[in-house]
Image 1 (cartoon, rainbow, N blue to C red):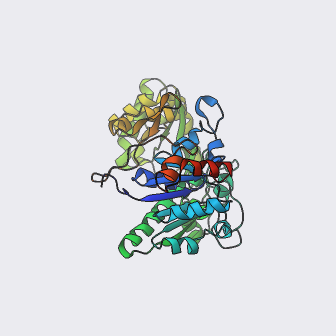
Image 2: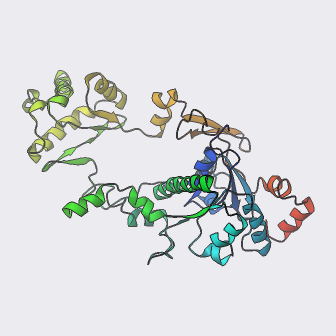
Length: 412
């Protein structure tokens, strides 16, 4: 085996809610065939677009989530489409889908039906809220799931309204969990020869990402609040995010013997440049007890630090922090990440050829390094129906005339 999932076939029926699941399986070497309606997957119409030209073959969102996949078009609302899909299922290892609950049942393509065609099949269903319960039939976009999953409540400034991360984070949490759950079911299939149905709720996936907030409520009856640029330290709050010349840095000055050296040196640096107030010049951070220090102290400290940090660049501050053991790090933007020496050294960024655009685009590389079964080299996301002939004719044995009739009949 060159890759972990060589010779494994995945039929991907997902939209943006589950596309990352197929992407991960494809990166591990599976042959992922995304099954699109003849008009194309709805995610193709989501921006941003290459060169800001809206087009279903230029979506950067689509590009990222569909590398290492092949595409066929198939109308599952047609009798002919359903029969073709059943033929594909017979040789598949996974089916992943993100239709509303009961949708596949109404098509006659639920797990009970498909498992009779292929008892080894793992079928993963992704829905906003699960297939049962009072919310089961509710629709859910990312902003809805982020809110109802609890992530928005803990994001943002405490004095402002909750916010949403401006990328579909709930879809990515869900896709990752769906891939993990699918692989667990596949391991069971490999051990026993039995497939199974896997169900993943977006709300539950997002709620997992809130981590310890539930425990805070369970033992203390407290809603863990969003903290923004300041962090609760004992009974007071300390600023941890500071603007600088070319962006922002995160910095903790928590005191104590272990951390005091770098913090005291930072104050000396400020003083050497004439930017340290008199009251702070001789302060010893080894004596700082954050559990009892007043809010007035942290407010005055914040003003002093902010004035000095604003005169420096991220790289200068980070280099100094590394040399003097100060708990400080730059807040990287995307350009910073692309130029980051650590990511470059690990060959994280890769260029993927897009011959149809006459260019290559830089993508994040492998999510892990496996010595024996490495992550598959990325191929660009497919065009709509790019592999129709390859699969329908080459694998199912249909003729060119058959494909013409199917296309004219709206089946493919």
